[in-house]
Amino acid sequence: MAKGYWVLSGTIHTPLGMVPYISKFTSWLPTVGARLVVRDLQCDVREGAPGPVNIIVEFDSKEAAITAYESEEYQELINLRTQHSDLNLTITEELIANK
Image (cartoon, rainbow, N blue to C red; front, side, top):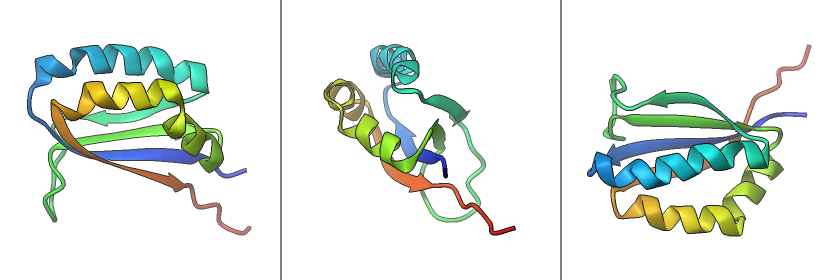
């Protein structure tokens, strides 16, 4: 089965304001079977203007990623994040090439 991913990119405006979100987010991830695979707060942007933050979270499937996003717990976490950042979050699926 293909893995599912959250891909976040953007800007954090008040880093200290993000501390409660980051603390709760990292504690919450294992409870939904997810793991942080990329966290770069100063990425090397070569094209476009997505902001210097890139985060990728891996789930067992795209469905699991969607369910986690729609969960009551994560919906509450969004409120902690949005007042201190402008992040885009996309839910996607890995490519499994035919052998």
